[in-house]
Length: 529
Ligand SMILES: O=P(O)(O)OC[C@H]1O[C@](O)(CO)[C@@H](O)[C@@H]1O
Image: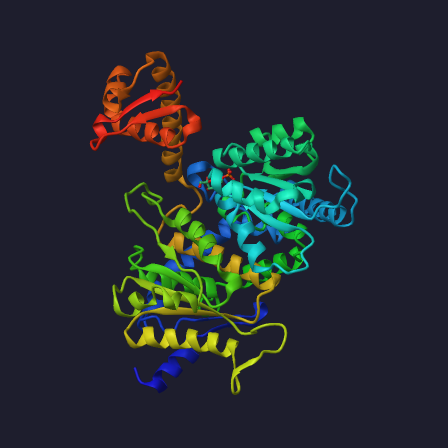
């Protein structure tokens, strides 16, 4: 394509959305002129399904649930008055609670004001809050956020060490929709132990965000924690960032959550449009469809050129891959759908994997995010007439061109600046896009049956570990994994038994001792004395 026709294609296909200070450029995708027209009937069907979803249909059919994250920022759209009221009341309670924390109305046990918060959660109960916290942090944040988002003991030690003596002035927010996620439970138990060790009353530092009457909800109620905020079954974990899950930590950090909700609501309003050329979520969904042939054949590489957006790709990884990565379509046919997401930030990633994007496998499409405002203050000229921000911009443009020269495809989202409004809009844009794309490929984007298998298998490993320890204690001698497995009548799990014992033996305080040879089948395990 000649430079002139490329400019024409750019002008024709640029979707300008001044309402949210955002534009979407699809000119560097390789679709032909008729593609959007051919897809229009499918797109109209997707709009109708989205309207039904927003109207309160049980869009998550497999779980018999409504899908209501859009109501969180426009409560008047909620299909029932009680839902609207709950959303509004929760928001008021969040703001009031934050006011009391910030103003010293609620103090820590030793009467000091809270200066840090420890947020414990995983998946949708951590990724959104982490993204927002990092994107919108400032040196003046009234509460500095820390996260326990795993059951990794060493990881938890690192976080607790960072908090150190400030634990007494740290508010703990335990987030779990189900209230029974093991990683989160473990993080909470470890945090409780840390408070106990310092002679502090955990309940006076803790609050919960969870489903009504969940295990966590009951614990928080029985122990008299500071507060409990609701999660509703009509909000999925990965779309919960505009519920208390994302709003409470953000507000405590001093982030303007009203602006974030306004940004999301404004984006919702314009992505409800059924005129595809002016709907950036629809255009993006169509480009995903085009790029991957409606089968996810290309990976989505997220390349935001702004450090503050580093965690966006991690957040989107769950939003897209848990929503779209499905074995069955809505009619129960095997389709094995999905779109793989990876990426960190530009220009840093140019020095990592962009080499492969330009010269290697052509199995991806890039989504660049450009932020027009470089920084709040004026910039140093690093070369005559040129700033660091000019270089960042140049690297984005350069990579986009270099990829295009090799026929490699990209989308470019431009936003004015990074602020709460824009972050809300970006979140809403991708949520809507995922929903529309799911309709185009006929899958349920709102359940996650595949995650359960891993959780169940992990539970079985923990059970087996208990059995093994009892068995080894009773045997009182050193045995190979094979002998133990045979003794337990579980020969089919010999490898698992070996792995469990090897792990225990690597942690001397766990009491399992190993005698090694060069052949693993001869390693002999016993309970130490
Ligand atoms: O909020 P919960 O119930 O602790 O779940 C955490 C995460 O676990 C999952 O169920 C599976 O990863 C996610 O969908 C969810 O966001």
